Length: 285
Image (cartoon, rainbow, N blue to C red; front, side):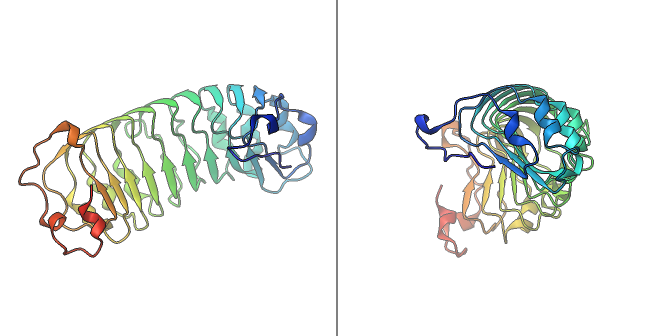
């Protein structure tokens, strides 16, 4: 069932109503994006297309870009292996991420970004995910000392936790997510050093964004190992200095912000000012 509209659809074309349960029985996918549905997510919805439904194939729930409020119902965890994609982004959902969602063993894509969710990210979190988007919420706590992702799928492609209140060290185990393509931890309160382990096994990584945190130290020279596929490496607005890796073949590098007037004299690698690297965009900031 598809009532989704494009993001730029006129307001007059959007559906202004609570979520009607009668639509959702025995449906394979629900697409209600970019409307004006309001109110809480009904608990009955979680039952009407959950494991008790006659159709038990993979399911999609996409309700992005509405005005849904209240908490995420823990009953959503009852979908078990039947739910493949859950997109509740760009709403006004509040409260914590319910720990019952760890039962969604078939979930591959989860987007809860642009809400008002708070608290910590549940431990033993979604070991089957390919994409995890939790950006621009109010989530807090460390990632490493509390072992937030002990069973995270090594096939994870996208991890976006930007724009929250997460703190502590950037955990080295991120380097074990060997299929990771995009890592965005920007706009948080991470501190400490950039871990050497990030270069361990990220053979497909194209973007690492650690901007606007409280990191210090140097850029690990071992990140040269990512030179073949890394396109964006952003650590601007931190307190990082020292020598840059010698020749990372990347299309855009944002290592610093000129407004901070940090003294980098003697630290710039010579390739920034020569034509040794094929991509001329290396010379542009």
